[in-house]
Length: 65
Image 1 (cartoon, rainbow, N blue to C red):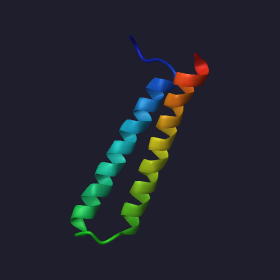
Image 2: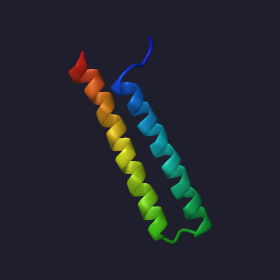
Image 3: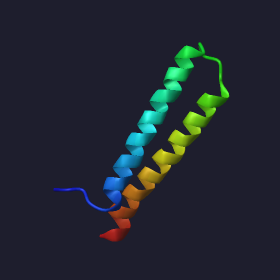
C-alpha cells in the first residue's frame, strides 16, 4: 500500500513539526528552562506544521475516498 497525494504531504509536515519540536527542546536545554522568544516561535511553527499535516491526513482519509 503506497501513500499518495495529501497524505504523503501530511507525513512530511508532521516530520517537519517533529524537527521544530527538537529545535525547541535544544533551546530549552540550552537556556536551562527559561522561556525564550526563539523557543516560543519554534513551538508555534511546530504546532502549525503538525496541524496542517494532521488536517491533510484527515482530508485524504475521509473526504477524498
